[in-house]
Image (cartoon, rainbow, N blue to C red; front, top):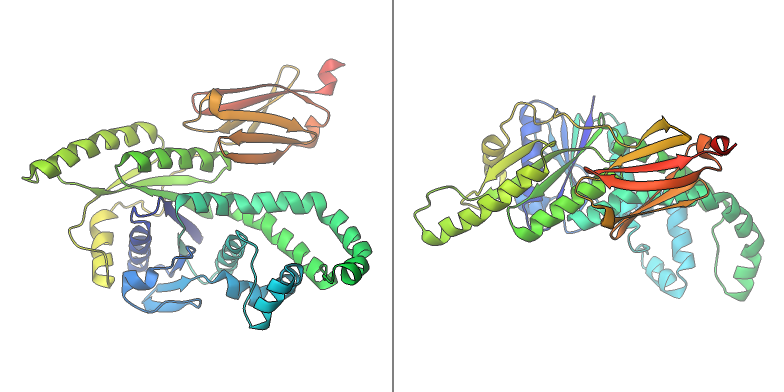
Length: 393
């Protein structure tokens, strides 16, 4: 069965090199592998010292690369949505569209990259798709986007179709603006269906895995811990942490040995946090990782474990269980404290906010009319309790 591996981490920690090493190792094993860059600052071409672009290019037997261009994807695969966004953007969009380019709502480009990765997976062409993602903050926005947009489309799509039909003449005459036509609304509907399937694909550990790359430095350690917490909140399967650029012992330099002692403290902290996730230590390579030979060396020396592509992953998240008077919902949020978490219930949704991230979870029908009675964080788990109407009487 084919699988997607999403490689992410704070900017500058070597995630692109690690993604390339994953791809080379996979190809060396005889698996047809595609290395995809979903980072707008593409540098796969720099790593392999070759030209890469918006179309699949074969680099070696069983190894191909692709640098996603979301603007090209929108023009070619969603032309009606592209036209609608240009029309809604007014004169600026029209000017941009007139010179053959695409106007994109900021942040939406991530969505088209994800959908293309899904299409590549479903094509069955590749055994493994290795995704070099943007730095962690953008990746988290990328991964929560399908669920967020699917929620909005589900809530407002029927209303949107009616309003569009009623308001189109008014918008055209008074504001000289074209609202979405039937073709665009149909395309949006198809997009919604793809979003639902995309969520299922990315959150299924049989088809997708997320891997975090970090280095033993304070700011990176803190960001990696938060990222792991947020990924669990959104139920993405994390199956590995790769600690890069670890200095060797006994360098013979007092300056370097001082840094090595500092790193040791952060390594111990990382290993105490990620007790349930496999950790791979990667030494600091003396030369820059550029060219196929350098990537192959990194792959051989740093990614030598036998189960690299088949690691265990925890799946015990979002569990409903009956309790006296109702039900409980447990969600894993490793590293979160009670002060970090806010929980609100709105009709048939429960909103969970952890610092600057929020997720809305649709509740099952059995909880219609229920009341939330508590939300407690303990040992990395959020437990929300609901009291049903039947319990009251």
